[in-house]
Image (cartoon, rainbow, N blue to C red):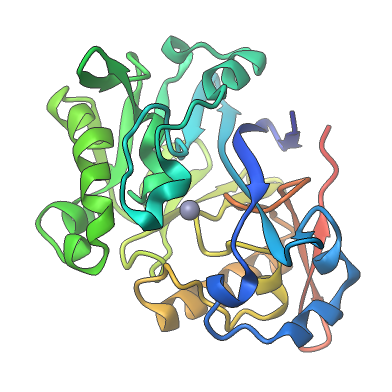
Length: 297
Ligand SMILES: [Zn+2]
C-alpha cells in the first residue's frame, strides 16, 4: 500500500485493480510509438506490458488525511454491477477486495467524512454505492458526497448522456442513490473542501471535470489530477488525449497547464490510472517534461 506524505497531509492509494489495459494506439488516437524512446521508464514493466504491448492500468482511489478529515477521492468501479455493454466488459459484475484494501489503510466505510468525485465516469463513482438486496445504497453512510455542480448537470440535464450513452446506467446506480439520500453537496471551481485543498476546473476528459489542488502554504503541494493524464506517456507527449476524452483540444490545454503547475511548484502528481508507484513529480526537460516516480513512505 503506497502512502505519500505532503506537508501535514498524507495520501494513500486504495487499489481496486492493477491490470493490463489498452494498447496505447487504441487509448491515444494520435499515438506515435517513437515517444516510447524518450525515457526508459515508459517501457518499464510498471507502465508497459511487454508481452501484449498494452499499458499497465490501475484503478484506485486516493485517500487523503488532512486536518482530521478522511477524504476519499474517486471511488473506482464497484462490485456486483451489471455492465453488459461491450465497451464496459472490464467492469461487469466485479468482485474486488476494495473495501478490504480500505480497511487495511485503517478506514471503515463509516469513517469517511468526504467522498469527492472528480467526474462521474464508470471507474470514478462505482463504490459510491453497494448492493443491499435489489437496491443500491450509499457505501459511506456518514460522508458528504461532493460533486461538481456543472459535472452533475452535465449528466442529468446536459449533453453527457448523448456524448457517452454507455455511462447513463452508471449515473442511475452509482450517483442517483446518494442524491436521493440527500448526501450530495455541489461545488464549483475555486471552492475549498478542506484547509488548503481547492477544487479547480480541468475541462476536456469530461468538459466539466474537476481536479483537487493542495497547497499547505509552506511549499508543499499535490494535485489529484483526475483523468487529465491516463498514462505517463502523456507527460512526454501532452498532445495525446485519450479516445475517452469529450473535448480532446481542451484536454490538451488542461494537461499543459497541469504539467506546468507541477513542474513550477514541485507538487506531487496523483493520477488515477498510472502503474506503480502510481505518483510522481514533473520536471522540465528540453522543451518538454519528464516524469520522476515518487517513493512512497
Ligand atoms: Zn478514469
